[in-house]
Image (cartoon, rainbow, N blue to C red; front, side, top):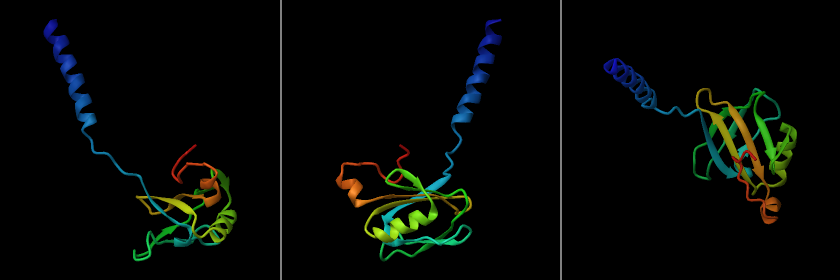
Length: 127
């Protein structure tokens, strides 16, 4: 009986080790950039042009219905995000996209005023 229990325990542990050995899959990637480096289209379904630095080649992603926008932690519309980007070209922006299909998942802007008032959240923060 002891051998059966030991064998059963070994098989269970082996399954756990095999499960833990699976490689991690990256689902999302992101950029951190100035607002002036991001061009958002006026409507969903269009391309978003992102330039991570002045000398970096630009990347195109698709703006989809599920893309979320936040300005200083408050969820806003696409139109409001476009207005905020234009109003504060030197503001800090985080942009994330799905690795699988290159669709934009979220855009978050943190204004200079927000940073000066002690708001330490970064664009990727969820709180």
